[in-house]
Length: 101
Image (cartoon, rainbow, N blue to C red; front, side):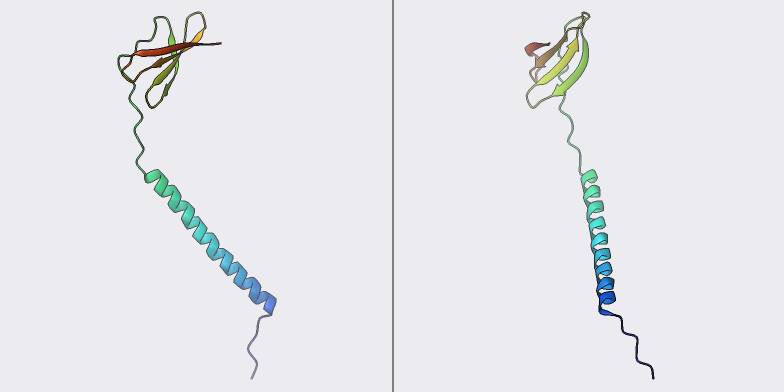
């Protein structure tokens, strides 16, 4: 009778390492996919409301709007090319105006 084949020690170690790395890779992939799914499934917070009664000066066009916790900033450009930042309170009243230089 023939003796059963026995793997060399270094081959056994290599096989175990590959198996372990495969398991770790699969677990890592499952973790990354679950984090992505959980993150995208979370309900998004609605953006703050822009006050309806904000009055932008005549002849200026809105370039950008930034919403803060208790303020709304509106960047405008006049017909002369000058840009300004208008900061409004949540109720739509003008708080401050700054010229961008």
